[in-house]
Image: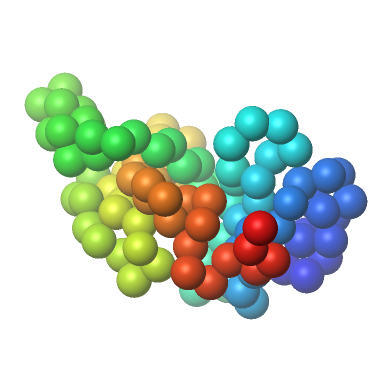
Length: 113
């Protein structure tokens, strides 16, 4: 993780969350963010894709009506995001979430402005 953090900082992304297993960056322009996460089951070459939506529960309900299967329905997580989990046809993990203010400004943000 430290090498990945250094790499993305070198590319110009601003580090806003830094833990041994998770890092979040703010993109150089606008308010978009992206995250890196190590799975607890060791290294794999998989990807986790995140999509944020303010009406998360309603979105998940609409997708379930369309036949989308979820591994986890919307759940309040300890890191202050509400997340649902599903997998795409290539078995990439997808997290649909709502983080609100905690996406850019979590209580543990490094170098708060």
